Image (cartoon, rainbow, N blue to C red; front, side, top):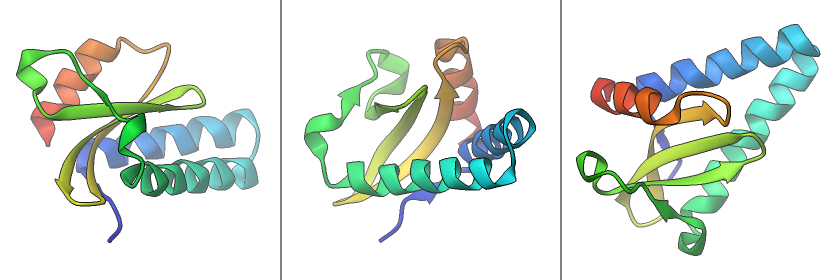
Length: 104
């Protein structure tokens, strides 16, 4: 079953697409977003790659890194993830993650 991408994560993915399209082109943007989504599906079955977020307010939230982005998620069921946020390594990750997790 495919991952559930919550609204805040959907917005972040669209921001990634927009930035990539402006910097390179729409073909590159499409390819990167497809790769990102495919990696989310792959990691769902690779629990050894999950790293817990060490913030008591975000108990049960995990992340993994893909290139320059961190993908934050909860486990919804066996092999199905609920993606909360996708953040670039240069962002204020703690603040953005708290903001995105509150939005659901």
